[in-house]
Image 1 (cartoon, rainbow, N blue to C red):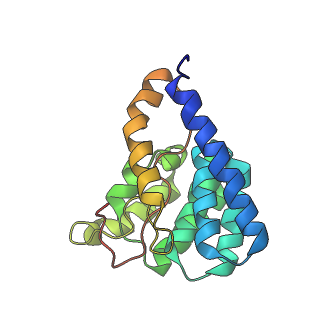
Image 2 (tube, one colour):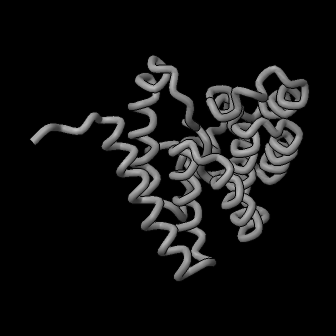
Length: 182
């Protein structure tokens, strides 16, 4: 039996997981953990408009959660919506996001890196980012299964970069006060 290319296998796996989580969310529309995981998967699959719609819903579910505002900023940035991305990122920081180094390495925020607004937000964080490591990784405490997706995404990122593939890599994080250990 011929073996499917690894990228095709990964894509099929993402599509299956997305379908599965969509069904689960249809049954329980207020399930934050399911919506959060689905948003991550949609972004990883390059379905940024769908991820944005779900991120907006997640912000409605948890308006004081810096992680969902950070993810919303990533979705906006990936869709070229600088103003909205910066406003969401600013809100995430107001709510407790403190990891400047993660923001700098997050490929989803690459479109914002030279923007004066992004630099102002980053400058606000620099003093605290050296002593604290909040908002790290793709993990959210209510969405435990995203750890393996983050590891897989990080392992495959250099391969995607070499092939010139698009796709979000660093979106998402933990709540303030959680360590970045995966």
